[in-house]
Length: 507
Image (cartoon, rainbow, N blue to C red; front, side):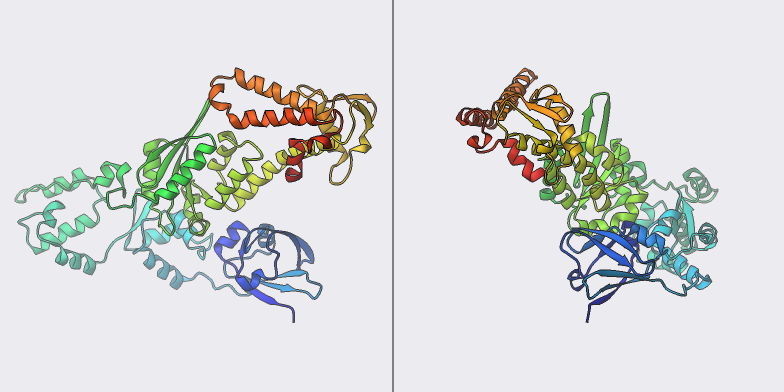
């Protein structure tokens, strides 16, 4: 019997357009590549891609077309012919968001961290879009709006228990009256719990009434110095191994990196008339992120962008708060992929700035980046393939376009490559007639001449002495040796040129 599974959708699946497969479900999909699945409801094909183990992407349009929501299911089955079929199974009856649900949710917010209305909706997707959440929050007796965030107040019993457990002298440190009675102490506790409801001057004036000693309520240090919020000596300094890994990657991309405490880096890029700075937070494995401290540090550093580097398993749970904080997520797998691509195509701050501003280098952001570089790599691979095929000709030689159009090379790609090779600094081919070209010089000699020209330009650049090393000189020596060892026209006598070797990898 053909295997069949039911997949329950999560909020992350709907946001990313991906499925995270179990080990059993992964057996019916290829390990990597693309495949066409069948939508059994609409009877249409869906093109899916598998770029990571047990990750199937390309389902965003499918989710939207069938209006799937959290906890809806997809039946994944395999036909006898081996084709993967997807059947959407939305819940027929969705439980309405009634008064009981609203009360339970609002009561749970009392014990949670201060959040804006947008953050509450992002963390609780079951709230309907048309539900008047703002009015419900304002009507709740234990929720108050302070600084744009809803904060939960402790109950009276909780305040009294906290006051009973307080050590002697704590009330004095918080600005309470040391000679006040029990009733006045409880009042001071209530004032401390709602210290942000009134300005400090008004509270001090109220406490300075006749017959009562004046007391001053100090501001918390985190308010006076927001840059130090949650960044005290008790916080871990960060995983130095991961911090060094992030620093090495940013340096390789052309950034000037400055080390900061608590697993943070400040990467600066000077692009002449334009500059940008990125505050990078390196997330240790399994670490929880303090967004308030991170945003405060961003304001202090005046960085243009905020990025979080970490393991993809830890970044999944940060998708919603990162979107609200306008931060981008960068997985270590994505960073390593960029470093590998940099060996084929030069990548610098100009190429990475759009991803620090939006999308990041994680899941969909990584796919967008690879897609943007794919065209450049394909053009370079086509040029190298044309050069390699020209090496099979004995120069000088007249040839036609069809002599080079073979295999995966398209006619338009060959025409564009020949156009480039006819211009400076190549001057390798010349157009004779419509569809006819002439290979002017033996390919090894032409490439050696081009290498010498490139190195002569390198020597004239500022700081060329520190850049030109033995590896570069050895490469030029190898090209010259290959050119002299060849028979003059036969490229195979030199054991194939270096560009020809690169072609097979890039094409």
